[in-house]
Length: 313
Image 1 (cartoon, rainbow, N blue to C red):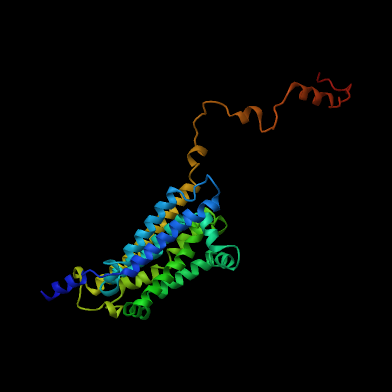
Image 2: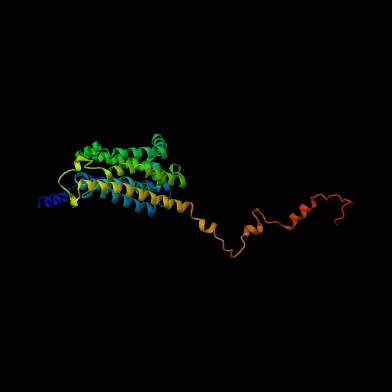
């Protein structure tokens, strides 16, 4: 009866008005930028945002709200580290690319300008810099001292989330950023995302094979869904390893086939074409060959002298 009561208390509704205010503020700011500044930036008659931009923004705000509000936030902060891991996956892998896909090019240029902020963003979004910073924060957020402190301190917890989201945006900028000069080639994206999936395997393996409680704050008698501390940590490692890797590798596979295998079928088709290509008939000349061109070439060609010893004729 005691365990059942504790489990019920774990699901008690908790208010988070700061999350609602954050989501509402971001939505109002986005709508204002699109309606007030967008028409001036793109010119009359051109849409400020596309349908894909709007869908990406709505999805990003939904993920932000779901990851930061009850019940996921409260379960992840007070009871299950696996829920904490799912929350971080949503904030670092799933939401940031949607935010960048929701941002049109003109809006990003308005936000960055062309001065120091732009130059700083250009440096921080270099693949090596962004990748190192992102993976460093991934490792730091799994240090027991940091995790236990974030669970005990609400402002520190939200500050850590802000850092994770900010560095995740930098990490995703070379892949789906709205500024073309910040993006890398399709092959570079494949290699880059593959490397991003390698480092998280270290803390994932540590959580999966650890004996006993790694984080003391999650070692308490309140066991949601009856999960033990060890099982909770193993599920967290599984989410980090398979969830992040499968997501990133899926993007790698998509980029590969979109870029490198799109014309494979046509290039390796051995069936006879229904008609001869025009290039085979007229060549690649800018103008077709005429009779006058042939006569002019023959007239300009010198006639070789006749050899009397040549009996071939």
